[in-house]
Length: 218
Image (cartoon, rainbow, N blue to C red; front, top):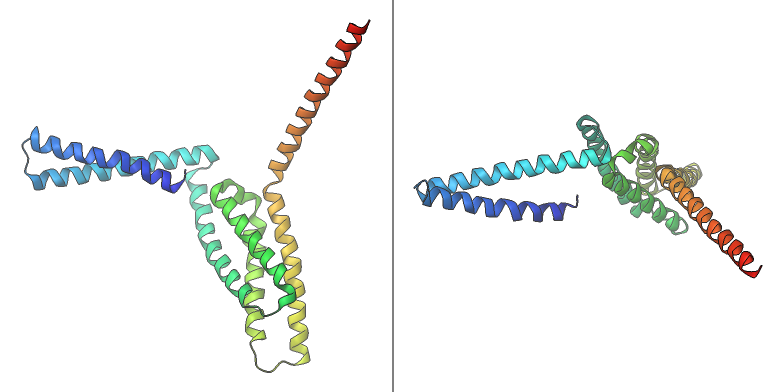
C-alpha cells in the first residue's frame, strides 16, 4: 500500500479513537485528565500497531511472500540502495563526455530495477543476478575508474586501463538491461497471451460476420 495512503488511514482511525478513549475515561470512568491522556495515547499506539500488522500481512499475502522471505529481500534491498547511491555518485564524477549517454542509461536501469523490486518484492528472485553480481561489479568498476582518472599524471598503460574499464561498463549496461528484461519477462509473456486471445476473439467475430453476410446474400 502507498505509504502516504497508509498514513492517512492510520490518522483517520487512531486520532478519533484516542479522542474517544480520552472522553470515555473522563466522562464515564471519572479518571483525571492526565490518566485519561495516558489511556488515550496507549489506545492510539495499540491501534497503530494493529493497523501496521494488518497492512503488512495483507502486503505479504498479496505478493505471496512469507515474513522470512520479506525480511531477506528487505535486507538485500537496503544494501542495494546504498550501492546504487554509490554507483550513481561515481557515474556522475566520470569526466568522459562520449560515454555520458551510456552512464545515464545505466543509472536509469538500476533505478528502474530497484523501484520495481521495492514495489513488488517477489521480483527480487528474478533479479538476483543483478543484485548479487552486476551491481557489485558496476560499483567496483566506476569507483576505481574515478580514482584512477583523478590521478594527475597518466601513463599509456593507465589510459588503456581507463578505456578498457569504460568498455566493460558498456557491457555491464547491456547485461543490466537484460536483468530488467528478465524481471518483466512474465509480464511480456502475459501480454503476448492476452494479445493472442484478443486476436482470436476478433478473428472469430470477423469470420462470424462474413458467414452471416454470406447467408444473407443467399
